Length: 239
Length: 117
Image (cartoon, rainbow over all chains, first blue to last red; front, side, top):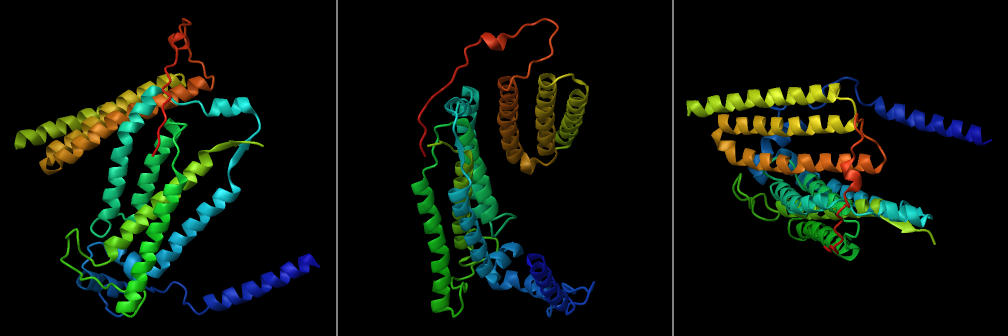
């Protein structure tokens, strides 16, 4: 009975998938000529610099044109962190093994990572502040900062990434993102409308709300990934 | 400025030679510790020299290349040290003709400090 049910479900899903994909002509150039204003790619390439004065077209698409989608992505990351925190943590029975794993690393490593950590954090912050001017952005900068925290977590076994502070950073960044979106809804008419003046191209303060949102995304991603690393490295004794 | 260009080319060639020797060492050496030391020493000086050479050829990038060189100088030996120490702690014995294990006798200096964010 179960197998028949699975087969029926497979047939239904397969039918609707092929039905949908039949609407799209196979092998056709859907993007079209980038110079042509009528296509999506052409519109983005020809209009982002004038309308948003953001040098990095990818950032303009991710944060402004597809900003709602980015909000969803950040939420997915948050859900993944929550799931990891509730399901995936290591428990060990053997006290000796916990002692062996939790041994601190050598003094050379500890001093070195203390020197490197501020530099890595600085690079991450640079990457997400300049997200609208150079390649990179909130997600990349956040990941770089999380690698710095990983270095500290494996060098100092008693290094605690304070979960209260991480939660605060994450929540404040999320609230900033959503409230900027609502501000756009109230004053401009659509969610995440770019209400601030666009400014001059290639200036640090330009592009309206785009840099603010990307900085918030950077902090959020950094806090989330640090939380994931801390959960995965932490070993709790079995009760 | 022509002289700077030629210094840069010279550094690039030196870096290339060292990187090649590092690759050869990884292929040729018998065990992990020898391979690590060949790989780390040669690639550290090779990468530093090559990147500094780029800085000499393009003087506008000089500051950036110096920062990268300093970063490689800190990070590369550090990671190699961590790898070798982990291998030793995991019980991997080096291949030796004379059984001299100086590290065994050394009291491992361990810093225990409370570090909080």
